[in-house]
Image (cartoon, rainbow, N blue to C red):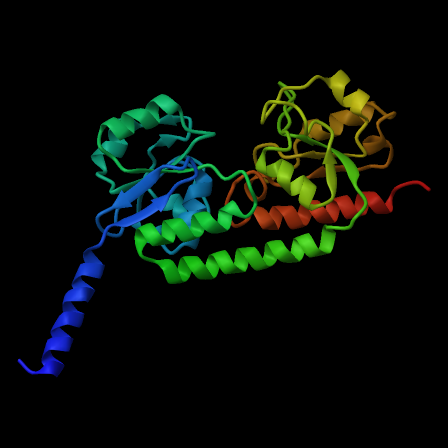
Length: 295
């Protein structure tokens, strides 16, 4: 064998070895996740995970997803495996996935442990920083060998995030109450990703220092905090009726200045790429509220 043929043979061997090398990333819990080959059958246990998988170029490989996995529109056709907080473990196992993307905040820990005991490989998504969405795109892209598409999506996300930071970094702070639900009255603290969006937009979360990520608060506490803005999410695309219930409290600055805003939860409460669409809307609403401040 001449030198040229020997070099070609060696390169071919190296390519085969590289192709067969296991794929390893670290998930949001710090756990090492390893696949012998790129993921081909994926189950998503959170709506935001479904969105991220599509953005990373892995949407066609999702064989099961939880309820409310409805974006992009083709995700609605994926077979359901229960709700994010009530998984159909038997159905998930029967789908024989080589990768399951879970959600620490939403999935029941005991059910995740059951999936692990069944020998399934879990990647847990639990982003608590705005930048983490981009890194999740990249890591899932590595596990599916769709690095190029995932990297493009991550770059686009980072650029948009940088633009928002540059635009709103020096805006005067404005006090905000973010209402997740009405009964019980629930909000978020500064450790929640929505709390990070509020900070991005120059908002000061009136319950940001509470020790619970999604605390229950009293109406009296909101009145005492006297937020300049109240933002509600609700469950769908329509403004929740209970947002306007605050109008009976005319002493609230948010009511007096008509700063009662609704942001659709799908683009703000899901930890996927569309989070920045919701962030842009929220930042714009806070700008409106600043303009209404009385001298």
